[in-house]
View 1 (cartoon, one colour):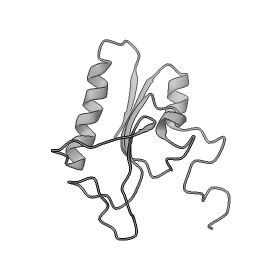
View 2 (cartoon, rainbow, N blue to C red):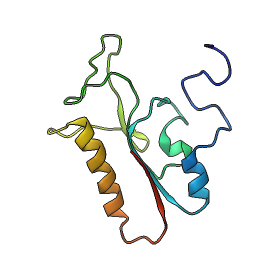
View 3 (tube, rainbow, N blue to C red):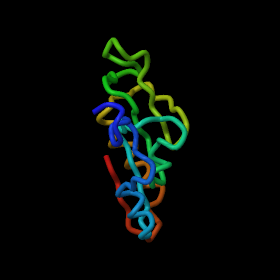
Amino acid sequence: HRGQPGYTMALEPGVETVATKLKRAGYRTYMTGKWHLGHGEGELPIDHGFDRSFILDASGADHWEDKPYLPYYKDAPWFEDDKEADLPEDFYSSTFIADQMQVYLDADADREEPFFAYV
């Protein structure tokens, strides 16, 4: 199916995410975790309805360090919103992904709108 519409490893033009629809309905939208849908221009979560995001855009990333564990990847890119991001010294993926979502929610705790948090 490679090369066919819908199999490009990125969201096709015109595809709406749940975040896009909820944002239009007045929700705040957040994402932390694995993205796997590209990190080129227009491909990050911030381009698909998420107000804030901290994501990994590769498979096979190490859980403790900023590096891949699979030999066919040269790096394991992390992004916050639309910028490449550095990981903290005490990084462990599962803890960090949950904690970062809490950071986003705490920063907007005084807001009245409902929120959608995708972890």
